[in-house]
Length: 377
Image (cartoon, rainbow, N blue to C red; front, side, top):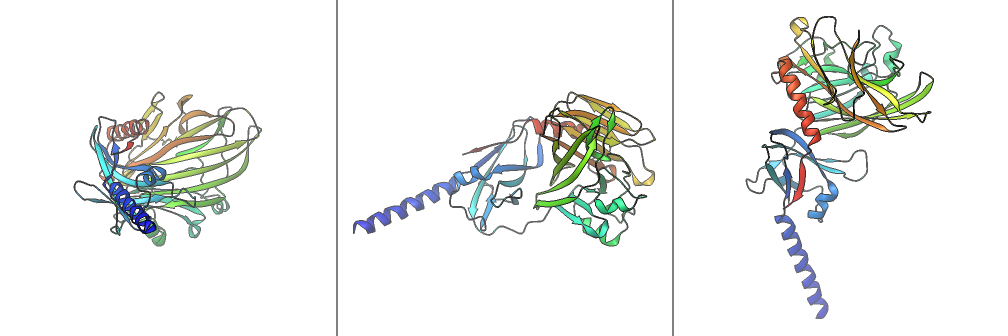
């Protein structure tokens, strides 16, 4: 009889605990006096489990507890075996907040807004995109084609929110706009649209193209991958690096984390850069805010591309030379550097002028410095 009562009490307490957890909500707050539109917030999975300890990862929904609206979400693994973050895309008013509740049930079908993949059929490209823009990095096979050889980041402009990389590679007509955008951005032997490289004795020391790749997460709200580069010499130093690149839904900019390894105990000087065109364009070199931006000259009927790099570490200097706009910074011994780079196209209907582009970048940097806050209610 005593055992039955104890069992009953345990089940009752367990039921009450579940009911209490179901009434709790995660609260995402915006500390800025600006609208945060379609921003992907990463809620640490450990924090989710504190509120919902019995959560079944294969059977839950994220809802607004007041309106019952269901949100699309992603379990982010970062290449690990266990979930690291719960990703949700939210729009939060200036100084406002949004409550999120997790309930049991099958979620609605999600539409992928980000995607990345290795492209062996196109000389080892690695390409990634979201619902705004697309990019690619060049692989080892391209080094066998001297006339096509390129180093930096390439941009594929878009004017659709569909994912189109596979379609473009299949039809092979990158330089023709079939209504969804095109590839008219020229990279060549430069840093392209926000590449990074050591900068020693006023010289950029380019590596060869990437050698290995690994996908860590692949949508629907964030795609993340790693590219590794073999050792190369730079002014007497031996350098290796790995780049971890991620792109969120709704963003014009990718996040790049570069891990450098060198045979020296001295800080490594590096530059992020943007290729400069022969014709006049509009530039923004804001060392204090860490914003390096370029609104390119008109490219015939193809339109105009805006390109940018946002630094998250102090900038030593920004400069313009014959080929590049450059932002120089220092990386401590065998440490990492995080920055953002990306682009926008005036024909996409989102950002149509240099003023729009520079304002977007300032607001992006403001959001980076004032992250969304997460609490429990």
